[in-house]
Length: 231
Image 1 (spheres, one colour):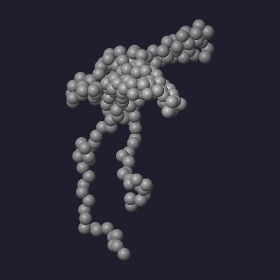
Image 2 (spheres, one colour):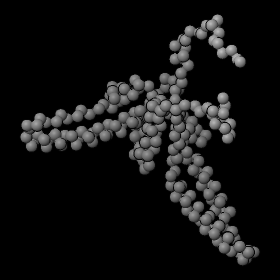
Image 3 (cartoon, rainbow, N blue to C red):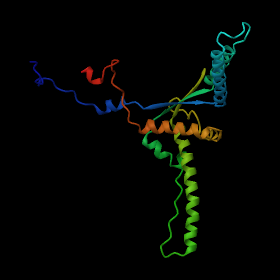
Image 4 (tube, one colour):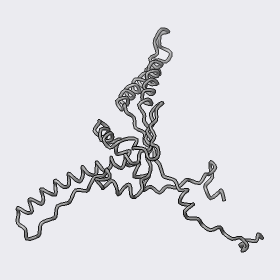
């Protein structure tokens, strides 16, 4: 039998918390944004044309004239050109997790944040109808203002989290202590574009996931074997 008795002569090293903290890293996520979504409609049309050409070729197999022109190579060439345009419109946004103080700053106007609108106080039970109507009106106005503030605060958080934007042959990366890669005003302009709301939502989700996500690096396994097979 193997002796599993601990070696009492071994002294564990003292845990250095400061050293451990200094080696910590920051979670990151990437978001792909394509700036030419109109190409999707063209792609679907070409796929339909290719499918029709394939069907016609199968139906006419052996019956086509020698000088008949096969449309499929031309369609495939157009599809390849369209795909290259699609890739050329791609940008890759890298965002990082935010520290708690950065999230808190997003509520502070003097730090570039957006203040939370003050919620109206409900009237007393004995208040008259006019007071209740005034409260209802103020609450509706507050709700709209709060929604706008939340939308703007998301832009503040995204601007703080973006570390790099990559396009084909071009890259914009934030250096330590440098201004943000993208400003809140630029993100607002992005959001106001068609499809912009969706792009901003993807970026915010990535920031939130990087900040609050709790994922682990998977243990490597061999094909066809479970992790328990590795001992």
